[in-house]
Length: 499
Image 1: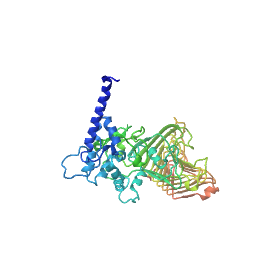
Image 2: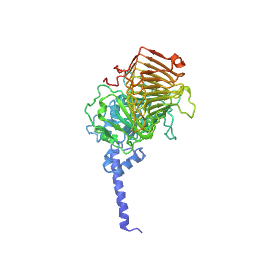
Image 3: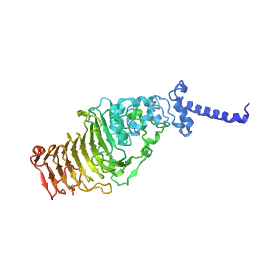
Image 4: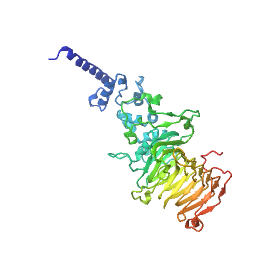
């Protein structure tokens, strides 16, 4: 038989447990005494929260109760206030301020928050408050689906690679190297982001993948103060104000943006506060892996808007990977014509400190409008392989081919090198490149159309064309251009300051 000293610890534990449970019953049964908490969907979570810490006891969410405007008693906490006293039209705005991660937590709290978050009108307000949608844009059929297909970095996901997984996530399958099975538009808030993994685009059918800087209204405060660059490993804990009132023990993004990725587990989120003063997003890609581009487009359509791309990787293979953007179908499988890789860049600046800016080979397509390729170690824009196509309008290809001695890439490259394929260059400035401005090489398959452009102050020839009498030379069109070994010309893209 057990002695009294052996019984005493267990008796004390039972007494404490009963006291805690009595506290929970008093808290939740103030206005709904007819409900048994054992039958409540909150019973399990409430027991866990209360037994975890005495400090969390006051955060046990009450059952949903109708607002009582005649009551003068102040709500005990913010969650109670939202349910009892907050105006109905203000609740979605408070949820938008709290953020999608907190909305996911509250969605699992009780019926009131679950029903509020499930409303499509709530997601409309959230989309407006987070600037994913603005008046004048086309209204989607489902606001929740619109929010899912427009993840924002770093609001919804801390990095662009994690946001890209929304388009390729499939239940029961690993996410690495999956093909994108749905269109997606990734919105990036202004700032500087450090990226350490290459992004592969393999979208199926006619789906497009868009990465663009988010358009903030002029009324948003933009600090002009200069700050040092800092690494924020856990951005969530730095948020202050009303968000500190929300505190739960579990976080799950599944109900908000269709992902189980942990938002706080991130070591490569880098933001420079001074960059918020601008309206652009800078992507800095640095890796020790050999010949890794930032974007490797193998299938489907990629759209980039309002980005500044800086690239650096190890290796010297400037044809197969050592480039900021690599456009090339996979060589080991057939690619349907409708899914051939293509990239459209609008208001994008590209710099590769280790290799080429953009490489488009083996049947890919690149379209550049109001872009700048500058200060690349090797060629600014390279097009090669049968069926490849390039369109460059209102853009600058400036000061490329400077070399990377440490990385093994020698100095002396062209601004635009057209080995094979077709290219249309209109109203561009191509200048200060260490070798030629434009080189069209193949006598049979390098067809160039050049008009209203300035080729100025390049290292050797301003324009190199296929031999006279060749098929490619007969199809080449060069009209209304300025070709000078010395002189100045105006930049076209608006992304480079006139010097």
